Length: 148
Image (cartoon, rainbow, N blue to C red; front, side, top):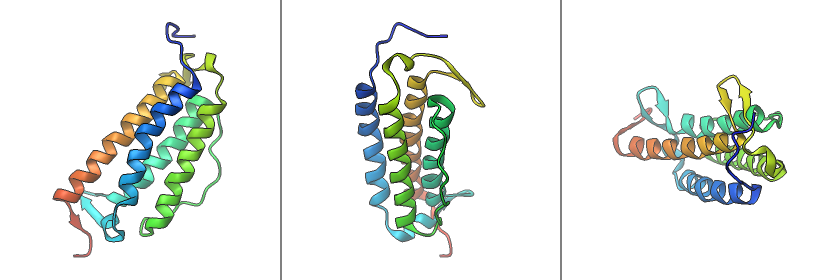
């Protein structure tokens, strides 16, 4: 099934993705090592960073059909490892975007999360990164550093 009506190119999708994802990565890189332990409820900043990259890998497999590579789960206490993980996830998404034929962007795919086009899936990933960026900001204002 094709939702049609939208002419989308990988170049356009990549431009939008890069605008949002580069801001998220800049925010992550600007965190101090101790900030990874900042917590609200049961969730830490490190948890959100890892979750963001993991979700990107899953969505690319589910909606763009590119298998998730094997990766070593980074330590949630190692900022550099988490940043590297986010950079690798971003490279995976970027490669997937550039390899998807333009006519595939609006074709509906089925996954564990339901039906979506690759275009909608990338839009959801952009929204997802934005939500978590806001949560990190909120955690830094109102959270507690574990162990203090």
